[in-house]
Length: 141
Image (cartoon, rainbow, N blue to C red; front, side, top):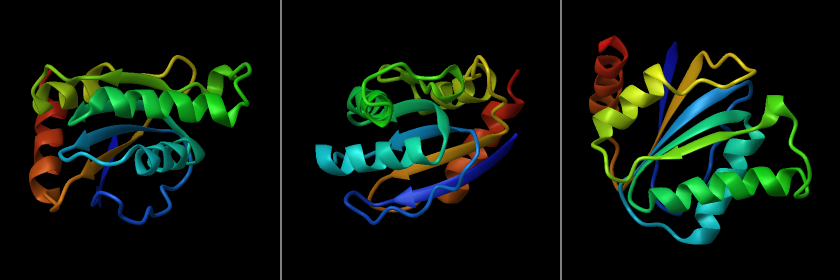
């Protein structure tokens, strides 16, 4: 399983998220406005995110934003199984438990997810620390 880290400051410009199926751990450490959150969710949908694990500040709002992006993308109609985005939120768990869930439980029913994106929304990056915590969760069986 490959892992990538992407830091976004609230209201920051969204980069391209690549393509191909992936899981995303949204690590939200600061509030953001609904419009920007929805734009990020739309970008995840466009980039073929198929599993969103939401943790931290307003994680249930992140969960809802991803679900809404999926519904909008298919004009509130039927979503093909291969495009369905699984979503979870982990508001009462430590980050390490959400990362463990991402590593060991966040599978898609019809797509292989070999790529994981750690999407860190905060005022300052912590790439080295968060990648190390993900690797520790990955090796914890």
